[in-house]
Length: 170
Length: 307
Image (cartoon, rainbow over all chains, first blue to last red; front, side):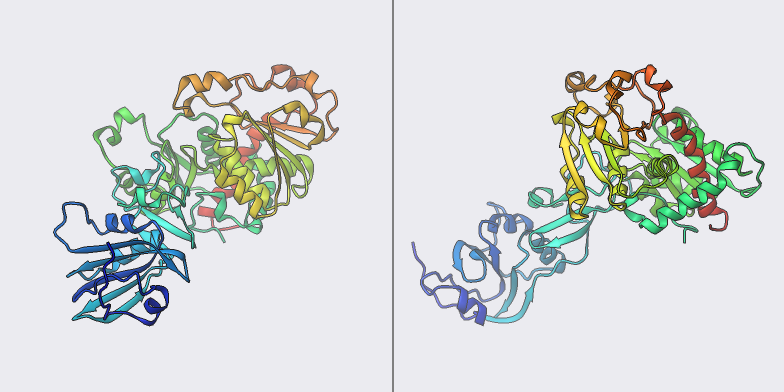
């Protein structure tokens, strides 16, 4: 069922990328995550800890046509402003995403996600024999070797991680 | 250049740094053969071996003692604090307070790097699981340089377990710094991991992969044999399928180049027949001796006041 509702929090890039017939209800307060690579919206929800039992009001649009990405997903979460570590995690699976913080229907902050050169305590090493997967008093640490597509390398065992990053999020 | 740094992975060595280790090793060779030295007098090296080792452990001990230093050993794990559940981080912090440098071998990949983050003194990685074994690589490079006169532009075959064998992972990477032409010889199930092959390709190294050893024996300058390691296989049946894939005999070497050298990190099982030992190509026992020389150079650089 198509929903036609005004998007007052829209930014110029939103306007360019979102065809008029694919609009989602504007939110009064919360976060709009745009330019998620097509098909990754459910992994973004996983990062945000949003499951089927959540109370949050969440809108998900998947595989919208996008001039920038070809296909993109959009996630809108009401009454929640994302924290920095949540934004970093999203960057791992959606390196082109933009995060819009909405208050009273207005975009008051807009961040383009940007991976730092090192990710600490966010992604587990996929190597089961890596020392970082033991009870030693260390956090997992990944060097960001490439950003789009994301290529990580464990600082301890040097094993690369590129696809299936969502499976290894802590 | 080296004082107080750690030796964890060949990835952290530039070609210039490798050359400086090999050059110093060359000047120290007489001491490795018994010439008296007190270069490291008063210094203590701690050996933390959480996995069995004969030559690596003993060659580190010999290197330290030949330079006049002392050695302390972590005893069998059953009698130490490890069996009481102490973390590696704590063990390293404590023993780092007793010694001037630590040598560590541990079954987990990345353990030496972890040790380096908690140790107050330099850490030398003597093998971390299927990860790195940089001092073995340095002695391999020293052997090639010593026996062939150069490392650049040689044709080198790495043979055997290229999947789990940490020595070949580190060596392949180091050879890429010298423009070597590398042939990888392994059963299909024991191919070099993609991450290492792509590293070689990205450095412009000429790499080819084959399963049949006879295709390459006559066309290389260095034949680097490795043991197929039973202890690295999660499934014993998989080990049995590939256990005797390669066996080098004198007959195999009939058409070899005159300058061919055969290397092996040892211990061997049956991948090189004992009859090969008497051929002019065998260098694996010299290679093992050079381990003392190269480890002397590293210890002197790390705790003896630099090159």
